[in-house]
Image 1 (cartoon, rainbow, N blue to C red):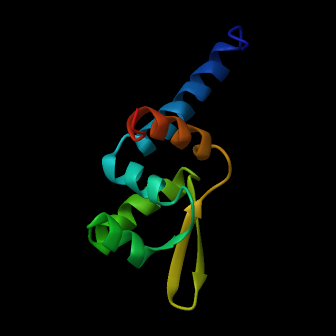
Image 2 (cartoon, rainbow, N blue to C red):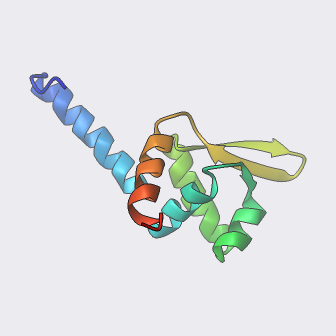
Length: 103
């Protein structure tokens, strides 16, 4: 790691990292990301599986999309969500191994 970077660049990177961490620092958003680890799911399925309203889910999905952690696609009137890119998958794997796996 290069710890000798420009202070302005370090500040910008720290702000981006803080925004990213805020995105996952919520139980509902973490549960959404966990549900999407293996497969995409419709908003309706996510809402039912998580036991939350579609309106509540929509707010969390918007936050996750804004941070480019999930992507969506539409099939007719149904919207499907999946993890976006590779940035979130390694982190979710680590969190799963720390908190969800039975020792």
